[in-house]
Amino acid sequence: MKLETLNFFDRVYEVAKLIPFGKVTSYGAIANYLGAKRSARMVGYAMNGSHGKDVPAHRVVNRKGLLTGKHHFDGTNLMQQLLESEGIVVIDNQIQNLEKVFWDPMKEL
Image (cartoon, rainbow, N blue to C red; front, top):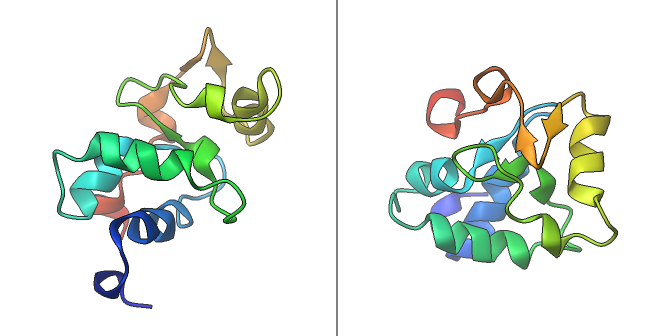
């Protein structure tokens, strides 16, 4: 499927689906990859609407590794639990060793 033929939210979802198990990326990295460098917030809106679309939204965090989207997940700490189940260490809503687990679509795709 060609990304160019999809609307912005669907393009975001297609990129997010490529994030490997045990890795995270940021809203800004996805926006940058899609040629919309200043649209990190729009990527966040897309992630908010991704539930039920088989998109690993828990793997998308802010540029500092903070779980800023956690309140959009059911349960008390579901986003953190999903990340930890993939071996990612989270302390105080902050991913530890972000540079080690960060996946940059500009470099990887």
